[in-house]
Length: 239
Image (cartoon, rainbow, N blue to C red):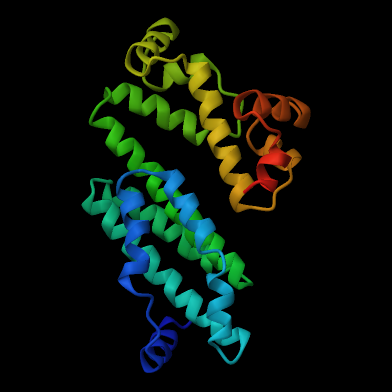
């Protein structure tokens, strides 16, 4: 890790703090499990790295300040998530994973994207915490399994085995509690992740199709257009 004490000292001297009013919308989105709100906030504030750079004498100084703010954000998001019901070890794992990524960032946009990716992960985990209060524990575990395997081919048998259920009972559980089939849930979650990647990264449609386990870019484009009404390219252009 970089010299956090030195960064903290410089930041304190210069009185550079992101006001709580700017952070609270993110905290609210996280504790409510609202990943769409996190994405919207990311879009609304995308000029923040440039604004920060304009207040600094050098790019290196801006990177130090952004790094410090990113570390603070990791700790704060971790705490609000735990207070809202996320298991502390899950929250700590997310925090530590992203802090290690902060060390590898080479630009202000890199750090900005990582912070918002971290907020997305916390919100996603909180979404399942909230669902667990309404859904059976087995359903939540199946949803979490699917969410963590979106980049792979997901078989019904594997989802059912994850919670020691038969394929028939696993399917019935989804239909009864969510009103949709497992395959529809998988398709929905892949589309949600595809939209997030189109909004928040520069990955091509081919890269996104590969990352989310689609057999080809053309099939991904067809599925996306059927659900969203536009192609991935048009969706990105309209953001």
